[in-house]
Image (cartoon, rainbow, N blue to C red; front, side, top):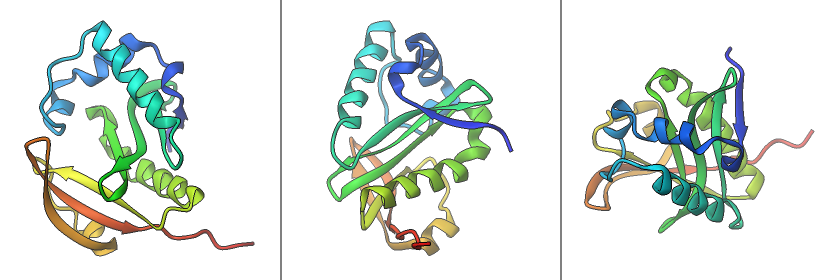
Length: 158
């Protein structure tokens, strides 16, 4: 397995994040927004650092073998907390490992449920639907999503 590392966003060069967040294959699966510039990416990092400081939230950059591969987090949502996973096209095969880490973090925070919104550009994930307490269509920022409500399991005491 590749070396997967989760690091604070302020430990990543903004220009590396700029290149990542403007990748066209990645943008196809995000809500519509203008391309980032240097000032915009710095502002985005500050917003995510503020989210990271909230109780029950964590936002991290993802490095694979030392290279920036995306970002992920647990963020506030109308339903409580949501999972966010944004991976470069080259790292798409690592989504399950990142998802498992996020669910571990959710358990660590004591969340009972988290939601995972997947833009309608993504196929339905049957394994995710089987895990979900509830699956429904939702609309956020003018786009359609499939929303999965996921129970957070507690670790077994040893």
